[in-house]
Length: 154
Image (tube, rainbow, N blue to C red; front, side, top):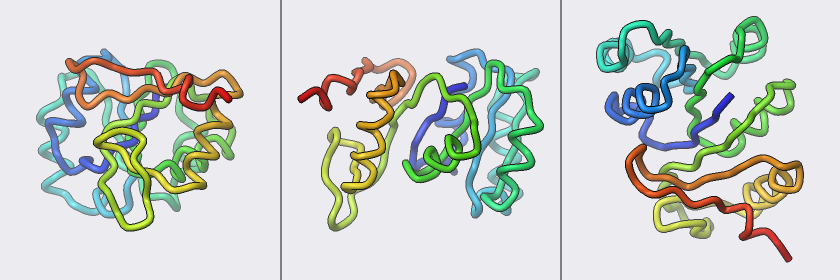
């Protein structure tokens, strides 16, 4: 299972480009606001190739919905590092964490020019690298990707 952390979940092109590029069978979008916006959900479904199942979830429905699903060839879109922590706490096996865009807010530090984190996020990502998880930064499917695991080597 691949998890993508990205602020741009309302943009149908972001969701569809990753789903189509990775040739996944299923996309899960975990976002409380987006799961309630019917127009955005329709647009995202229209952009994604036929055959790719799209599921929109609120956080409160996360545990039951994902644990019932087969995780083969699944891409989960979330908007925060804390969402990834929640997935892992539920026992979801994550093979890759892909960092997209996380806008700057006061108190956050740049992990890249497009991805900002706080101290707790950094600690979690460091722990994931120690557990052998690959963590990549990649703006879009066609841009170069950088593995950030070596940032945490001391």
